[in-house]
Amino acid sequence: MTPQHFLVPLDFSAYSAQALDYAMALAHKLQARLTLLHVMPSLAMGGGDMDVPLPYAYMQELDAELNRRLASYLTRVTGAGLNGDMVLVDGSPYQEIVETAKARQIDLIIMGTHGRTGLRHVLLGSVAEKVVQLAPCPVLVTRQPADAATA
Image (cartoon, rainbow, N blue to C red; front, top):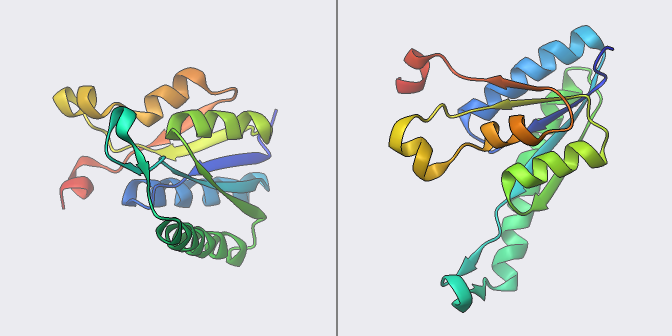
């Protein structure tokens, strides 16, 4: 089975940009479609039971900015002659990536990883690791070479 629909989660880091480059190169070869996804973690002021939603105007501005950033990535995709679309959702990144893959019948998820290890990995977790464990399809994880990540 040849994958025809790729999901590329983007957090706007160099790692996700590299994953997009890889996805675009592979999509050219396989004539696949790309869905670009950004997950905005739920934001609130306070903590625990005292959470207060952020002001509506701020959330509207943030949503517009994220849509502009996603659209610029989509312009790269379509400018390269590929078919694609974009999705912006709120929630837990790994959960929304998995749910989007299920809902859109994705054949392959291509995503970057920050490559955290040790205590940083324990404290911050790994979205990529959780996606690999729970995804309904294969997951290809890209990572920048160690020398590029520290440069």
